[in-house]
Length: 334
Image (cartoon, rainbow, N blue to C red; front, top):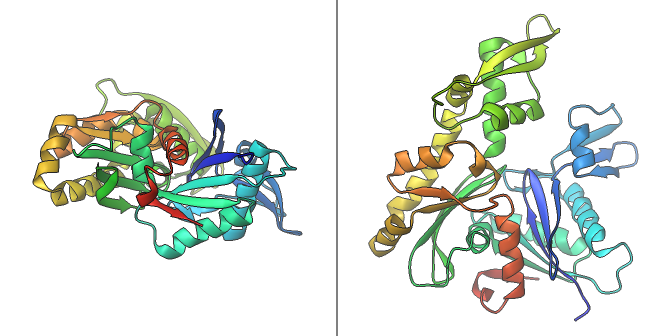
């Protein structure tokens, strides 16, 4: 009874922590800075994100998750320990219960790695639940009914489309293309067309400020600073929103391809429900301007973005943790 209960949305770009009784208590970038000499964690979250691409030789700032799964086990464990201690306190008498969500397309090895890292970081019990399911719960979709609901969760490392009925995933498809790949597409386009090298953070800033999934009626412009790839000197160029739309078209079509793949496999009865209700979008990348319009145009099914899409998965994880009996079919426990 005295143990605290945490729900963690361990994302490729951001990690959000939900605490029973308090709601969301932590929302930080999934970045860790490690000292090379003694393998010690120097900074985590916002502080470490400021260091990305700006560190001296003896410190490495990196993202321990890639494409929605653990890429660096030791660093992920250290980061989870930091998050748990930050929320529960350093000296906790009772180990907390922790629920973490993972992409539905995860392999058993990847799932085991998340469970082991969570237990090693100080959890008493670790639970795993599929991300599309908790995204739907957090987006307040009535998933327990005998009707089809479609959710598209587009994060930083992976995009997942799933149809949910009677509290379980009926059909799902996941592609490891999402926000990070969109940033990479912008950076490589600027390098090709303007001979300018920009970092990941600059590419993300361009996406947020003038990025759009469809062409804007009024073109927007942004001055971008970077390094000239030929002369090697700092330079500023002006990028237009039309160029950004063109740059991100291919990764967006790959995400929409996953959505179409799910729609093709859906049983006819559920397909009619989806046409009536539309597709719900969650995850940080669903905030990209006009992405819902492009999705509607390409699939022929109305799409809308849920409230607070970046927090939907964490909220859903919290609700699932409070109602373990309801969702026990979908939960892996250790």
